[in-house]
Image (cartoon, rainbow, N blue to C red; front, side, top):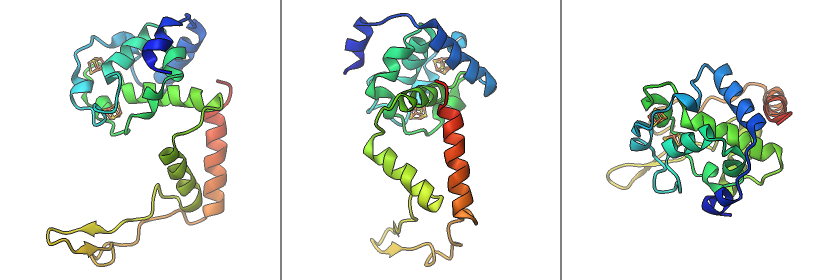
Length: 178
Ligand code: SF4
Ligand code: SF4
């Protein structure tokens, strides 16, 4: 459902907003209350073309308590997590962390991950990498592997089983009790 439709059905959920605020404070970030809508975050957003709403508008909606509506929207999956908004905010507000909190709530409620994100998660669980290293194309059109560029192999966890177990436990803690 489009966010604009969800907003017309909006219900205030102060406990959910308090939870998101508490978790942002635990990360040492400012809450969206400190946002004065300067737009610096949106000016550097990598996903601007994908986002139905700009990062500063997401922060404003979170501040106004539309957490439930944002959680149910596809918007939260469009962010590329480039962290520009966190870097650029003069107030210590981090739209990307607000988005990640909203994703956690959505997943804990059984929301299906977008296909690309699912593939990335499976790859991390299997190999410790979001994807296997790819060849890069030089100016001449020739392809180069890491080895050809004399780069060391991409570092991976030494004990994959222990790594996967730790990651799953962390996810359970992060997603638990939402
Ligand atoms: S982290 Fe997401 S919301 Fe923030 S600037 Fe990057 S793409 Fe945009
Ligand atoms: S950069 Fe920070 S203060 Fe400015 S609009 Fe974005 S979140 Fe708000």
